[in-house]
Image (tube, rainbow, N blue to C red; front, side):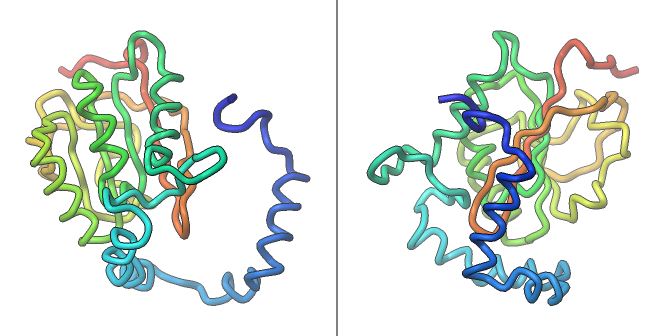
Length: 208
């Protein structure tokens, strides 16, 4: 199966899907609500236990890709597809916007110990859950930040240099590595969208 779609979706495809959604949800009404950061945080703080109880005990917040009948392994399917798209030499750095409960990072980081993973999420509860999970795994190649990805805590054209904090820390490290145009892979899920952006080793700028 091709990733992420058998063929690139067109504007007509998007319009058709939005019309289907609009028959169930009043999209204009939802847009008019003007939900801010506090409402988003409140939603996820209230729903985190329900996600684990009814959706995924491992804390996945996206839908499983399970041809035919549902299977829990399907929660890892899109991550396996992302990893399979990486060349023999994996990306130098990966940035996840909206890491949720850390499901994606906890799956990929131990499998690619030479890759530096960064993540930011708006919800304090998510940051706490993800930090605990990564610490238990001993993943030392991940840095998390709690905040709004519309205002990244790192300079716009930089990411953290190799001398970075320990896993699960949002500490301040020297920002020197260049962050050119990234390739992004959206990870759709119920009520949220996680995006992973990768930076290749060939584009890396050595720290000074």
